[in-house]
Length: 438
Image 1 (cartoon, rainbow, N blue to C red):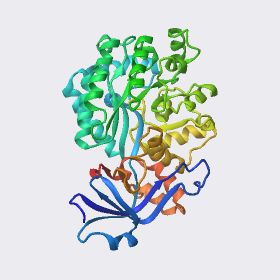
Image 2 (cartoon, rainbow, N blue to C red):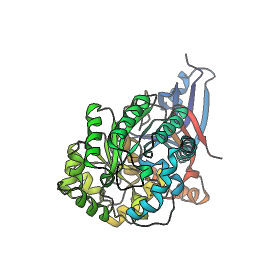
Image 3 (cartoon, helix red, strand yellow):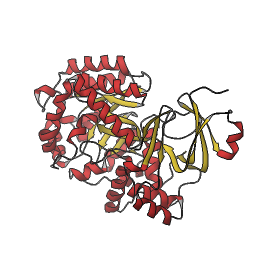
């Protein structure tokens, strides 16, 4: 028996079951690759995966088979750090971080006090994310509760798995963006009650970064996290050298930037710290011991001149690294563009990113670091049916390069370096086709 919400996608399939390592060839058992696969989805989840020839005899008579032979199925991409409220200030003239915040970010975020504006931008943002194959993201809203209500409303309408939260900031920003400590906590508690765990939505506590919160606000946010370990937390850490000097002046009682967060109980297994460029190995080790992750935002780091992330130093101490666009400091929403920039940053550090490690990071790696790997991040029976259909011949140049590739690794690397939104033929989330390339 099958339901009306049941169909099969026939295509080449690639998914990861484990970290492939840093070698030119993936670690044994880390990759699942089927040249002619059948992906059977039903009621929003994956029912079965196998070679098409093996699965076809057991398929119900008349089931809809969507033939995408010549295309590549992968899990939906995951973005671990992005600001939906900055969508319309992407590509604003690049200055250093603190100037960029004051000149562009803060004035833009003031607009999100209006629910109608926030809903319109939420819809536009999610359409763009689906267009580039991203099915899950951890998202900064603004400091206005309406911005969170709007984003979760738009996400629920599409039945997307999304994490998001209201920004907490009570100083060093325009008055229209600042909350007060207790008022902000009450807002967060209401938003958590309304949205956390609703369908595929999760709440991420979101102090912007240490300079815009007093110790009292950071402590209060830590109290929320201790009271409910199912919550996530996202903030920024050590992005820019000027930021480090500012934090040291604001929190002289803390030995370093990370300890500001540690003292408020904000560092744990569901904590994401964006950037983490200017860290010593001791700080990386402390993050790893607590199970936190660093969101590597290569295009943003390059655009704002913040520095070159040391990926190998993080791996050496077992610190989880996730991959993120960091829109609007980042220059592209596409996960493929993020991997391309990550490879380029790695080359400058003598630690180039393989396609195996890149696509693992964008899928199962990000899911594991965000504690979402029981639901998304790989293609396997029982998992939620979030996946992308990639076209390796999407552009004339990509097709030419594809024709010369001899191995799967070469094809993946070409896609990582030459692919863009045109490479995403379809995006499926919750078992529904939610984007089709024109």
